[in-house]
Image (cartoon, rainbow, N blue to C red; front, side, top):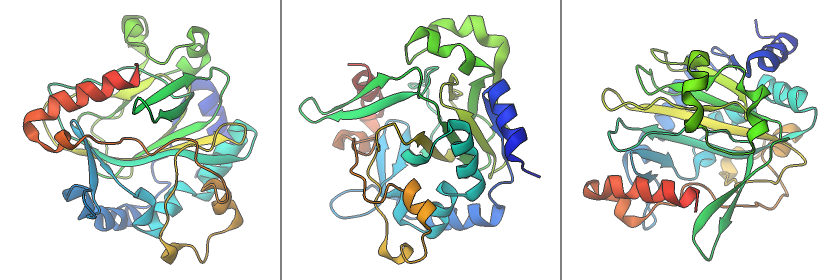
Length: 284
């Protein structure tokens, strides 16, 4: 049985908690059915689908494909957990459904997410500003069975990561290697929630199956709104006031949806070039 008090204690101590079972297998299957077609075709020239970014595909207009997706992002237990942890009302500032393909060209860096994202329209890049005292919850839920390439977290790192006032931590991997927890060989529905000051990454892998996941970042009200949220009118009728709060009703977005793909990223021959350019843009 899930319990708010013990869950908060677990996050306070370790920086993360395994909430697998929070979302039923049936709902995961329903989401996969809704996104199957758009995740198989590019989002281009009026056709709804995915945005390509190197070895990853991101579902465009993520929240518009079904009430099931909205219900995950606004799950009662998840929101109560996030608001108790942040000691504030929370909103969904970043969100994605994405597939990651094995790659020999891309290795995700160790990083944290207590930062503000904004989009520089002139330079056409996303700019990150680290906010060390920011406090909120991120979750990742597997929409597929994951053998390799799973989420990795550095247990307890939320207690000291803010001392460095930086976003990337590859340079310290040898120092925290004994505290790495890896969620490999896990079934769909695996649900990991963590303090977004916790150092984490997706484990690099160059073979095996595609990993499809759902990501959400729940931020306190003092933080910027974040990405725009586009909903289908079909799903608006029965939204509660709490769901409307979490989904930023009446609020102006403070950045654009990430990623914004380059046309050449649809070409297999330029996949490596696309992801390397995108990663460089994050730190320019």
